[in-house]
Length: 264
Figure 1 (cartoon, rainbow, N blue to C red):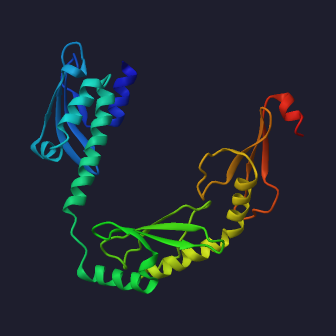
Figure 2 (figure 1 turned 60 degrees about the vertical axis):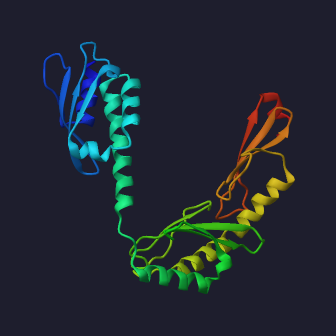
Protein backbone atom coordinates (compact mmCIF):
# COMPACT_ATOMS: atom_id res chain seq x y z
CA UNK A 1 0.00 0.00 0.00
CA UNK A 2 2.78 2.43 0.98
CA UNK A 3 4.68 1.57 -2.20
CA UNK A 4 1.58 2.34 -4.30
CA UNK A 5 1.11 5.67 -2.52
CA UNK A 6 4.76 6.55 -3.11
CA UNK A 7 4.40 5.72 -6.80
CA UNK A 8 1.25 7.85 -6.99
CA UNK A 9 3.06 10.77 -5.38
CA UNK A 10 5.94 10.34 -7.83
CA UNK A 11 3.69 10.21 -10.90
CA UNK A 12 1.16 12.83 -9.73
CA UNK A 13 2.96 15.05 -7.17
CA UNK A 14 0.17 17.66 -7.35
CA UNK A 15 -2.60 15.21 -6.38
CA UNK A 16 -2.84 14.82 -2.61
CA UNK A 17 -5.18 13.04 -0.14
CA UNK A 18 -7.55 15.37 1.67
CA UNK A 19 -8.46 13.13 4.64
CA UNK A 20 -6.90 10.41 6.82
CA UNK A 21 -8.96 7.64 5.19
CA UNK A 22 -7.58 8.72 1.82
CA UNK A 23 -10.98 8.56 0.21
CA UNK A 24 -10.72 12.09 -1.18
CA UNK A 25 -7.90 13.23 -3.46
CA UNK A 26 -7.67 16.71 -4.91
CA UNK A 27 -5.10 18.61 -6.90
CA UNK A 28 -3.86 18.74 -10.46
CA UNK A 29 -3.04 16.35 -13.28
CA UNK A 30 -0.28 17.49 -15.63
CA UNK A 31 -0.12 16.83 -19.38
CA UNK A 32 1.93 18.56 -22.06
CA UNK A 33 3.11 21.16 -19.57
CA UNK A 34 -0.41 22.14 -18.49
CA UNK A 35 -2.04 21.55 -15.10
CA UNK A 36 -5.74 20.65 -14.80
CA UNK A 37 -7.74 20.69 -11.56
CA UNK A 38 -9.16 17.32 -10.55
CA UNK A 39 -10.93 15.75 -7.57
CA UNK A 40 -11.50 12.04 -6.94
CA UNK A 41 -13.99 10.68 -4.40
CA UNK A 42 -13.38 7.06 -3.40
CA UNK A 43 -15.73 4.77 -1.46
CA UNK A 44 -14.62 3.40 1.91
CA UNK A 45 -13.32 0.18 0.30
CA UNK A 46 -11.24 2.36 -2.12
CA UNK A 47 -12.61 0.50 -5.16
CA UNK A 48 -12.19 2.61 -8.30
CA UNK A 49 -15.28 1.14 -9.96
CA UNK A 50 -17.46 3.05 -7.46
CA UNK A 51 -15.40 6.24 -7.46
CA UNK A 52 -16.45 9.68 -8.70
CA UNK A 53 -14.28 11.91 -10.85
CA UNK A 54 -14.81 15.69 -10.69
CA UNK A 55 -13.03 17.82 -13.30
CA UNK A 56 -12.56 21.52 -13.95
CA UNK A 57 -14.51 22.83 -16.93
CA UNK A 58 -11.29 23.08 -18.97
CA UNK A 59 -10.48 19.40 -18.39
CA UNK A 60 -14.10 18.38 -18.98
CA UNK A 61 -14.04 20.22 -22.33
CA UNK A 62 -10.80 18.54 -23.43
CA UNK A 63 -12.06 15.09 -22.43
CA UNK A 64 -15.37 15.59 -24.25
CA UNK A 65 -15.76 12.48 -26.38
CA UNK A 66 -13.50 10.43 -24.11
CA UNK A 67 -15.92 10.06 -21.17
CA UNK A 68 -16.76 6.45 -21.99
CA UNK A 69 -13.08 5.50 -22.13
CA UNK A 70 -12.38 7.27 -18.83
CA UNK A 71 -15.33 5.54 -17.14
CA UNK A 72 -14.22 2.18 -18.51
CA UNK A 73 -10.66 2.64 -17.25
CA UNK A 74 -11.93 3.73 -13.84
CA UNK A 75 -14.09 0.61 -13.64
CA UNK A 76 -11.23 -1.76 -14.51
CA UNK A 77 -8.20 -0.10 -12.87
CA UNK A 78 -6.94 -2.03 -9.82
CA UNK A 79 -5.91 1.10 -7.90
CA UNK A 80 -5.77 4.88 -8.07
CA UNK A 81 -2.17 4.88 -9.28
CA UNK A 82 -3.06 2.75 -12.34
CA UNK A 83 -6.10 4.88 -13.11
CA UNK A 84 -4.14 8.14 -12.94
CA UNK A 85 -1.52 6.76 -15.33
CA UNK A 86 -4.23 5.76 -17.81
CA UNK A 87 -6.11 9.05 -17.38
CA UNK A 88 -2.87 10.88 -18.11
CA UNK A 89 -2.40 8.87 -21.33
CA UNK A 90 -5.99 9.60 -22.44
CA UNK A 91 -5.48 13.29 -21.67
CA UNK A 92 -2.24 13.37 -23.70
CA UNK A 93 -4.05 11.88 -26.71
CA UNK A 94 -7.01 14.27 -26.32
CA UNK A 95 -4.72 17.30 -26.17
CA UNK A 96 -2.73 16.13 -29.19
CA UNK A 97 -5.88 15.56 -31.24
CA UNK A 98 -7.25 19.00 -30.34
CA UNK A 99 -3.96 20.63 -31.35
CA UNK A 100 -4.11 18.89 -34.74
CA UNK A 101 -7.74 19.95 -35.28
CA UNK A 102 -7.02 23.59 -34.44
CA UNK A 103 -3.65 23.78 -36.21
CA UNK A 104 -3.50 26.54 -38.79
CA UNK A 105 -3.45 25.32 -42.40
CA UNK A 106 -0.23 25.83 -44.34
CA UNK A 107 0.05 29.01 -46.45
CA UNK A 108 -0.73 28.83 -50.21
CA UNK A 109 2.99 28.83 -51.11
CA UNK A 110 3.33 25.52 -49.22
CA UNK A 111 1.12 23.80 -51.80
CA UNK A 112 2.51 25.62 -54.84
CA UNK A 113 6.09 24.78 -53.82
CA UNK A 114 5.16 21.15 -53.11
CA UNK A 115 3.33 20.65 -56.41
CA UNK A 116 6.22 22.21 -58.33
CA UNK A 117 8.75 19.89 -56.67
CA UNK A 118 6.67 16.75 -57.25
CA UNK A 119 6.28 17.83 -60.87
CA UNK A 120 10.08 18.05 -61.21
CA UNK A 121 10.53 14.63 -59.60
CA UNK A 122 7.74 13.15 -61.70
CA UNK A 123 4.19 12.42 -60.56
CA UNK A 124 4.84 8.74 -61.27
CA UNK A 125 7.10 8.76 -58.17
CA UNK A 126 4.17 9.75 -55.92
CA UNK A 127 2.55 6.69 -54.29
CA UNK A 128 0.10 8.44 -51.99
CA UNK A 129 -0.66 11.68 -50.16
CA UNK A 130 -3.17 12.59 -47.48
CA UNK A 131 -5.87 15.16 -48.10
CA UNK A 132 -3.73 18.01 -46.72
CA UNK A 133 -0.52 16.90 -48.44
CA UNK A 134 1.12 16.86 -45.01
CA UNK A 135 2.19 13.23 -45.47
CA UNK A 136 3.39 12.00 -48.83
CA UNK A 137 4.88 8.69 -49.89
CA UNK A 138 7.36 8.44 -52.79
CA UNK A 139 8.80 5.39 -54.50
CA UNK A 140 12.06 4.53 -56.22
CA UNK A 141 13.70 1.48 -57.75
CA UNK A 142 17.26 0.42 -56.99
CA UNK A 143 19.67 -0.90 -59.63
CA UNK A 144 18.31 -4.43 -59.14
CA UNK A 145 14.71 -3.40 -59.76
CA UNK A 146 13.54 -3.55 -56.15
CA UNK A 147 10.93 -0.96 -55.17
CA UNK A 148 11.51 1.16 -52.07
CA UNK A 149 9.35 3.77 -50.34
CA UNK A 150 10.11 6.94 -48.44
CA UNK A 151 7.44 8.66 -46.35
CA UNK A 152 7.76 12.38 -45.71
CA UNK A 153 5.80 14.18 -43.01
CA UNK A 154 5.77 17.84 -44.00
CA UNK A 155 5.37 20.71 -41.57
CA UNK A 156 3.35 23.87 -42.19
CA UNK A 157 6.55 25.93 -42.53
CA UNK A 158 8.04 23.68 -45.23
CA UNK A 159 10.55 24.18 -46.82
CA UNK A 160 11.92 26.37 -43.99
CA UNK A 161 11.28 23.40 -41.67
CA UNK A 162 12.65 20.10 -42.93
CA UNK A 163 10.21 17.17 -43.13
CA UNK A 164 10.52 14.00 -41.06
CA UNK A 165 11.63 11.02 -43.17
CA UNK A 166 10.73 7.35 -42.72
CA UNK A 167 12.38 4.55 -44.70
CA UNK A 168 12.85 0.78 -44.47
CA UNK A 169 16.67 0.71 -44.27
CA UNK A 170 18.98 -1.57 -42.25
CA UNK A 171 20.63 1.47 -40.65
CA UNK A 172 19.31 4.91 -39.76
CA UNK A 173 18.76 7.28 -42.67
CA UNK A 174 20.28 10.66 -41.88
CA UNK A 175 19.41 13.47 -44.26
CA UNK A 176 21.79 16.39 -44.72
CA UNK A 177 19.44 19.24 -44.02
CA UNK A 178 19.58 22.95 -44.69
CA UNK A 179 17.07 25.68 -43.80
CA UNK A 180 15.68 25.18 -47.32
CA UNK A 181 15.80 21.37 -47.57
CA UNK A 182 13.57 20.39 -50.48
CA UNK A 183 11.86 17.14 -51.37
CA UNK A 184 14.12 16.98 -54.42
CA UNK A 185 17.33 17.07 -52.32
CA UNK A 186 15.93 14.54 -49.84
CA UNK A 187 14.87 12.24 -52.68
CA UNK A 188 18.38 12.49 -54.16
CA UNK A 189 19.89 11.41 -50.84
CA UNK A 190 17.32 8.60 -50.70
CA UNK A 191 18.49 7.34 -54.12
CA UNK A 192 22.15 7.53 -53.04
CA UNK A 193 21.34 5.50 -49.91
CA UNK A 194 19.55 2.89 -52.05
CA UNK A 195 22.68 2.49 -54.14
CA UNK A 196 24.86 2.09 -51.04
CA UNK A 197 22.69 -0.80 -49.80
CA UNK A 198 22.39 -2.59 -53.16
CA UNK A 199 25.04 -5.23 -52.30
CA UNK A 200 23.39 -5.89 -48.91
CA UNK A 201 19.94 -6.43 -50.43
CA UNK A 202 21.45 -8.61 -53.19
CA UNK A 203 22.97 -10.85 -50.51
CA UNK A 204 19.75 -11.00 -48.47
CA UNK A 205 17.66 -11.77 -51.56
CA UNK A 206 20.03 -14.60 -52.48
CA UNK A 207 19.73 -16.04 -48.96
CA UNK A 208 15.93 -15.86 -49.18
CA UNK A 209 15.85 -17.50 -52.61
CA UNK A 210 18.36 -20.30 -52.02
CA UNK A 211 17.79 -21.34 -48.39
CA UNK A 212 14.88 -22.34 -46.21
CA UNK A 213 14.39 -19.23 -44.08
CA UNK A 214 12.45 -19.93 -40.89
CA UNK A 215 12.47 -16.40 -39.49
CA UNK A 216 11.43 -13.78 -40.25
CA UNK A 217 8.52 -15.12 -42.30
CA UNK A 218 8.17 -11.88 -44.24
CA UNK A 219 11.48 -10.05 -43.90
CA UNK A 220 11.51 -6.30 -44.39
CA UNK A 221 14.30 -4.48 -46.20
CA UNK A 222 15.62 -3.34 -42.82
CA UNK A 223 16.01 -6.91 -41.49
CA UNK A 224 19.66 -7.96 -41.16
CA UNK A 225 19.11 -11.38 -39.53
CA UNK A 226 17.85 -14.70 -40.84
CA UNK A 227 17.24 -18.03 -39.13
CA UNK A 228 17.89 -20.79 -41.66
CA UNK A 229 17.02 -24.48 -41.45
CA UNK A 230 20.18 -26.60 -41.89
CA UNK A 231 18.95 -30.05 -40.93
CA UNK A 232 16.57 -32.04 -38.78
CA UNK A 233 15.87 -30.03 -35.59
CA UNK A 234 18.77 -27.67 -36.32
CA UNK A 235 19.03 -24.14 -37.67
CA UNK A 236 21.54 -21.34 -37.91
CA UNK A 237 20.98 -17.70 -37.08
CA UNK A 238 23.03 -15.29 -39.19
CA UNK A 239 23.47 -11.54 -38.83
CA UNK A 240 24.68 -9.72 -41.96
CA UNK A 241 26.53 -6.41 -41.64
CA UNK A 242 24.74 -4.04 -44.06
CA UNK A 243 27.94 -2.02 -44.49
CA UNK A 244 30.01 -5.12 -45.31
CA UNK A 245 27.49 -7.67 -46.61
CA UNK A 246 30.04 -9.95 -48.34
CA UNK A 247 32.05 -10.52 -45.18
CA UNK A 248 31.43 -13.68 -43.16
CA UNK A 249 28.29 -12.98 -41.09
CA UNK A 250 27.91 -13.60 -37.38
CA UNK A 251 26.54 -17.13 -36.95
CA UNK A 252 24.87 -19.01 -34.13
CA UNK A 253 23.69 -22.63 -34.37
CA UNK A 254 20.37 -23.44 -32.72
CA UNK A 255 18.72 -26.77 -31.87
CA UNK A 256 19.38 -30.06 -30.12
CA UNK A 257 23.07 -30.82 -29.43
CA UNK A 258 23.19 -33.91 -31.65
CA UNK A 259 21.48 -32.06 -34.50
CA UNK A 260 23.87 -29.12 -34.26
CA UNK A 261 27.01 -31.31 -34.00
CA UNK A 262 26.08 -33.13 -37.21
CA UNK A 263 26.11 -29.81 -39.08
CA UNK A 264 29.49 -28.59 -37.82
